[in-house]
Length: 367
Ligand SMILES: Nc1ncnc2c1ncn2[C@@H]1O[C@H](COP(=O)(O)OP(=O)(O)O)[C@@H](O)[C@H]1O
Ligand SMILES: [Mg+2]
Image (cartoon, rainbow, N blue to C red; front, side):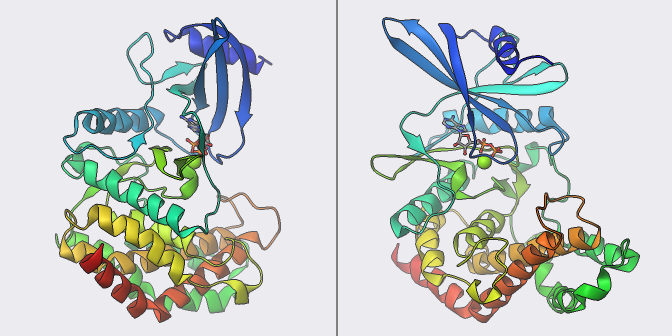
C-alpha cells in the first residue's frame, strides 16, 4: 500500500506550494474527513503550514458538487460588502485551477492552516457560546444576498422532514430485523409529534419563509476560535452548505449546544434543555441576524430547534429498526440510546417552548 506521505506529496505536487515538505500530523478532531496538518520549510528557520484533507466520498456522494458550492460561496464571501468579524475556510486553487484535486479516485483539498486556533468539542462558557452564535449568524448574513438556488442540493432532501417521516414509517412497516416491538413507545412519540416535525417544510412549501444559504453543520467544532481571546477566527466544514432554511442552522446548533448531556447518554434523567446555553447562543445569533431575517423566520427559530431534534430522533430510531446501517455504533443499543436522548430533549424543548420564544423576543428587542 502506498504510504500516506507519498500520497500527500502527490497532492502538493498538484499545487504551487512554496518550500520543502517537512512532515505531517493527523488531526483527530474531525469525524468525517481525513485531515492532516502539513508543514513546509521555507529556509531561515521559517515554515508554512497547511491543512490537507481527503473528502470522505462514502458519506459525500458528490464531492465535485460540494467543491463547486464552496467555490461559489467563497467568491461571494470575498467580494461581499459586509465585512464579517470572522472568515470562512479558503481552499487553494490547484495548478489546474480547481479548488480540489482528484488522485486515484480520491478527492483532496488544501487550505492554509489557521494559526493559534482551537476548535472545541463542547462549550459551556457563555461568552464562547454567544461568539459561536454570532459567527453562524454572520455566515447567513454575509450570504443573505447570494441566490441560494444556485447551490446544488448535494444531499437531496437533507432536512425534508416530510420525506424523513415517510422513510421512518416505511422502515417501521418493514420491520426488517424484528426490533419494532422493542420501540413502540418511541414510535408513538414520533407519531405524536409528526405535525410539528413537518411545520417548517409546510411553511416553505407555502412560500412563507425564504430559501437561504445554510451551513448545515453548526457545531462548535466547526468554528476555529482564537486561543488568546475566544473570538471566532474561521468557520470550517462547508461540506453540507446547501439551500435550506435559516432555522436549520439555529436549530441544529441548539440541539447540540443546549443539551445538558452527551448525545448517547443512557441516564435519561440527565438530558434536558439548558436554557442558559440556549440564551447565550441565541444572543449572538440574533444580534448578527435580526436585521436581515424576516419576522416569520425569527418567530420560528425556537420551532427550528424542536423540528431538528425530532428529525434527529427519527433518524437514530429508523437506523436502529433497520439494523444499524448508517450511524457507527459501539454497543448494540447505541442508536436506540441516541434516539431516546433526542426524544427526551425534544420533549423538554416542547415543555419549554414558550420560554425559548420569549427569550428570542427579548433578544430581538435588546441585542
Ligand atoms: N484551516 C484549518 N486550520 C486549522 N485547523 C483546521 C483547519 N481545517 C480543519 N482544521 C482542523 O481539522 C478538524 C477537522 O476538519 P473539518 O473540516 O471540520 O472535518 P470533518 O468534516 O471531518 O469534521 C477541525 O475540527 C479542526 O480542528
Ligand atoms: Mg468538522
